[in-house]
Length: 206
View 1 (cartoon, rainbow, N blue to C red):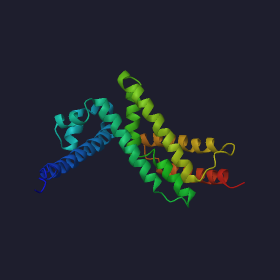
View 2 (cartoon, rainbow, N blue to C red):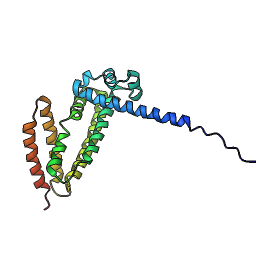
View 3 (cartoon, one colour):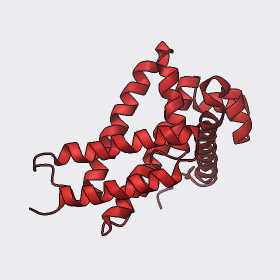
View 4 (cartoon, rainbow, N blue to C red):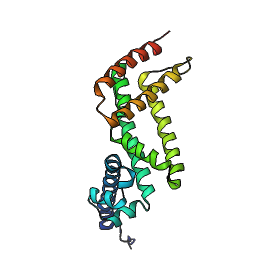
C-alpha cells in the first residue's frame, strides 16, 4: 500500500505572507524617508510621529507598530539614510580624486545632514536621545572615514594621511553648516577644488 503523503500547508499561506511582508517593508521605508524629510524641514520640535505618518501616507497606529517610540523612528531614519548614502558612495568611481572629494563634501549639504543636525541639537537637551544619537554618529563617522580612505586610495600607514582624510570630512561638515543659512555654492566649489588639490598632493606616492 502506497504511503499517504501529508497535505502541505505552505501553498496559499506562504504566498499570502510574502506580499504582506513586502507591504510591511514598503511601509517601513516610507516612514523612514518621511521622518528624514520632516526633520530636515520642520526640525525636531515639528516632527511628531503623527506628522511623519501623514507624510508617509500611513496611520499613526501603523507608524507605532513599526517604531514604538518617536526616538526609535528618528534614529532609525537617520541610520537608514546613512546606509543608503554609504551604498551610493561605494558606487562612486575612484579614478578622479577631485570628483571623489566633491562627493564626500556633498554628504554634508543634503537633507540627511540637515536631519542629523536636528537630531544632534535635540540630543543635547533630550536625555532619552543623547546616548542613542552619540552612538549612531560615532558609527556613521567611522564608516564615512573608512569609505573615504577606500575611495581616495589613501595609505593610512603614512604619517599624516589619516589626519588629512579626517580633516577633509571635518571641513565638509563645516561647509555644510554654512549652507544651512545661505546658498554657499560658489565659495564652497572654490574651497572644494583647493582641497582636492591638497588631497592629491598629500596622497601622492612618495
